[in-house]
Length: 272
Image (cartoon, rainbow, N blue to C red; front, side):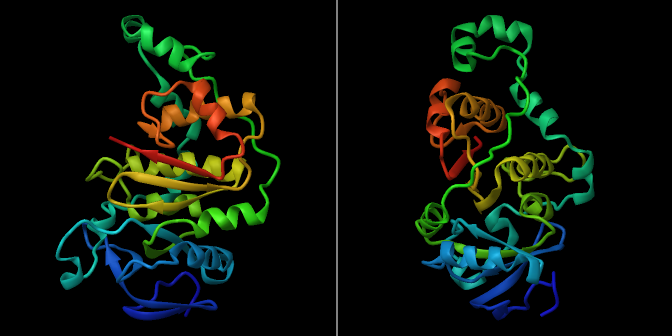
C-alpha cells in the first residue's frame, strides 16, 4: 500500500499491522476522509499504539472512534456522520490559525458579563483575571512509556479509524470533525480551531488525539504533562477556554482542575 493512501474496503494490512474488515467513509459532500473498521475492536487502544508508531512509514494517523448510536449500523455499515465527520477544512489554513487566539476567544468575557457573573467567574478563574493569561510553558519531562502504554490499553472498545494526515493534530480538520453538529467549512470552522489548539499541545506536550466521536468527546494522550501545580494551573486555564467540560468536570475552578492535571496522561474534553 502506498504511503498516505487509505486502504480499500475489506481487510487491510497497514505496515506490519493486520486489520479486520473495514471500509472507506466519506464526509457530507462525498469527500473521502477515513477508513474505519466495521466493528468496534476490544483492543483498539493497543492497535492504535502500533499504528501510531508506524505513521512515518504509512502516512496514516490512527484514531479510536466512539461506536455509532444508530440501531441499523450493522446492516448499513458505518458512515462519516456516525463519527461527526462533516465538512473537511483546508489544513493549510492551520498555518494562519493561532491557538492562542482561539483560546483567548474562548476565555473572553465582556466587562459587563464579568461584573454580572463575578460571584462565579472570579473564583472559577483565579488567580487569573478577565484577560486570557497566555499559553502555558511547554512540558519538559516525558512520562514513562509503561504509564502511557497502560493508559492506551485501558481504553474501551472502539472502532479504529485511519486518516491520511501529516501530523496527529491535523486529524479533526482533515475529517471535518465538529463538536457542535454540522460545521460549515471555512476559516471559522470549529474543526480547524480544534486542530490549531491540538497542534500547539502536540508541540508543547507531545499530545495526540486518541479518541473522538459523534458524542462531542475528545480524548488526548499526553506524553509531557505539567509536573508542577503552577504549570498545571496555566494548562487548566487553556482547558477552560477550550471546552465546556474537561476531565469530567463542569463548572470547575481553575485551581481544582490544575491539581488534577499534574502528571495526567489523558486529557478529556466535551462540548455541550
